Amino acid sequence: MENNLQVNIFCIQKSDEFKTWSEKYSKFISKYATLKEINVFNKKIALAQNLNAIEAKKSYEEAFMPYKKGYCIALDERGKELTSIEFAKLIQDKNELSFFIGGAYGLREEFNQSLDFRLSLSKLTLAHQFVKTLLLEQIYRAFCINNNHPYHK
Image (cartoon, rainbow, N blue to C red; front, side, top):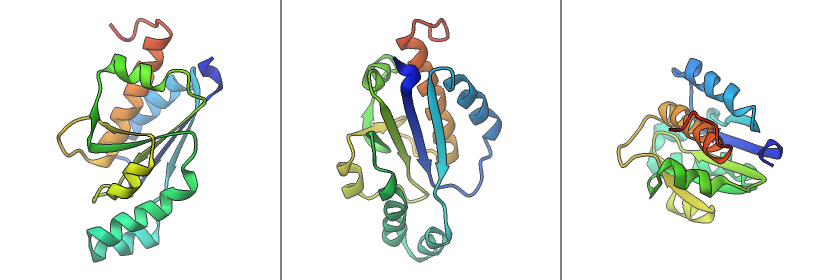
């Protein structure tokens, strides 16, 4: 059952302007799974982002590598777009989900390809703080779909 599910969200962010919304959906998700949100932003990433996109992406990957476990999903604008029902099916019956949200420069193609799935929430480029909040809402919606909860109509 999904109550044994571990959901991990790894992101690179300095602050969370959408904290109130993120906390709201995190609380809802906790009814269905154990949720860990881990911000891996560090000094090395800050320095790399000031150099160039290539160094920034490498620093993101180095920060994320220790956390690659379970069914791993990259959030990527070039990934596959799913309906909420398709997303619910994708995450159904998994024991552990790990979502990776890149920083300002996104993620290296090689890192994305090393994961199990690449998910696009939109073809638009979105702020990573917003992506995290949107992802939390969709995870909650997926749990509601999979458990016949009326949140998803």
